Length: 276
Image (cartoon, rainbow, N blue to C red; front, top):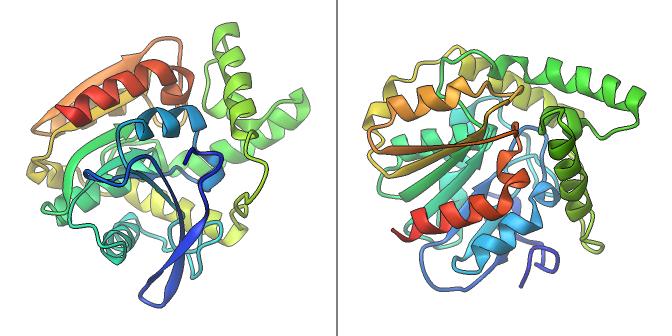
């Protein structure tokens, strides 16, 4: 089953249906994908999903209130992490690996700290530790990108996820084309209520503390582009510094969506890391 053909299913999490998709083999430690601000299942790059699913059981999820999942989106990263733990257990998993992008990376950090026995290895992309400046600007950046992209005839992700260089913008075109490959059973868009709750959660994250990262003993791969306008690239260095067992990979001529622009390199590094 590939990213573009994976069936959307639901699982009951404390009385709320959570939408999810799976790809890859059924054996081994599952790799749970946790997505960014405003994202739904269809915002995952098929090149990344299928690349990692070549060797791992990949699980994509809409958290509470997102996409086709029920309930109301929490307004804190900590509550979102609690939902991930419940979702993982609802699927019967005793241990998982995590791929967290941006806000999803924040959720992964909290989950690894609070539930160390549940998390084996972690990949964090384009994200920041609690207390770093930048997360609270997400809504303003999104609104600005929506206005600018409309004026320039572009998609907001051209501006938010990729560098302004020709090479990076061409990679953005290819990435957006891949996102449109799935024709049937597409996910629902996020609501304004979800966007508001997630923006509040990100603002709270900026006011937090990174001290808990000292207790995250799992191996962590931290990746980002060298020109991230959404989560400043320096935050990736700070994150790797706070984590006791981290390696850092910064991709050239790339932004917040570095793992999508350099998807072949990212998949190669992630597979090596997860299989180590």
